[in-house]
Image (cartoon, rainbow, N blue to C red; front, side):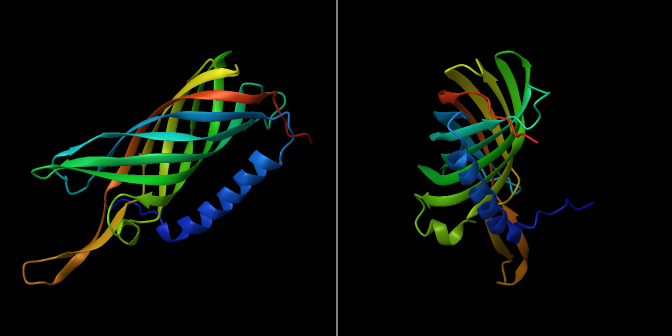
Length: 216
């Protein structure tokens, strides 16, 4: 049974829409929003359907701005988080010598946040990313420009002026689309391969720490 495919042709439109909405939420809301600056490190690698050999994780960075809002006034422990982040992902491969592949993304996570305890919360959602740059020669002509992943995260000391977060982003869309060629030079099919996987850990510095609600 074949796996369901994600229509990657729609990703640019979806990313642009979510990006604009994120800008409106982050920069257009009132000054009493729960707004924070985020900064931390990434530990990333790739998944390969073709069992790409001798790959190793690399470290990178993540930083950005986060806004948290509460759509349900009666349910204080449920909120939404919208972010604009710069995030560096990639992997290392040993081909006789080590080669490091780095990809710099503009990422837009959209998360549901649930706080079972006062200063502890869990998050889940999606992250849409656009490739900004890479250290791979002609990389922007080779690799797909848009990425989509699932996100699962935890936050400690949530709601305080300084808090800590960790999250895993599990890539759903391929970084590469290419054709397989046999020994005779014939095309034997399309290959969609290499998907990001990334652990992010960091600190969140609150700029404004008052809850905002959507009033009906």
